[in-house]
Image (tube, rainbow, N blue to C red):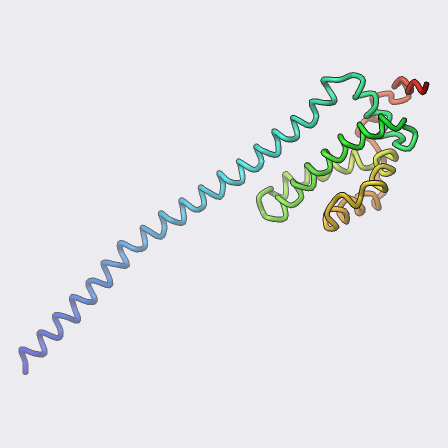
Length: 181
């Protein structure tokens, strides 16, 4: 009987040692896994930010590569309703892409991919642009092209009634008026 007791004790000890070994092996594995997941999340976030930055750069190329389009854009932000039909189409196509890019950034922020700090920068840029009367005129005609959630964001920016300052030092009154023939 005494021998049987020692045998049971040995098996119990071996089982306890096995559990203890599993813990010592398992904890570093879990720490390693958590570290890898954290690094992948950082890489994913950075990848999204890089993609959005490239899209933004591609979008703004139209402004610095074409003086003609830049003039349309500057007239459009002042008074979309005063543009001729072709200029309205060009401005509208451009500004729709602009806001679709902002919309993607908004949802990236909502998903925790963009930090609050980056979203704050984007929101300030949006406010600077959306504060112009022409952009608000355009928005009235194209609000339905965007998600309701993002439309509420734009509407809230408009409701603030911020003064348009993005181009306040550009002497917009000197932008050549359209030739309407």
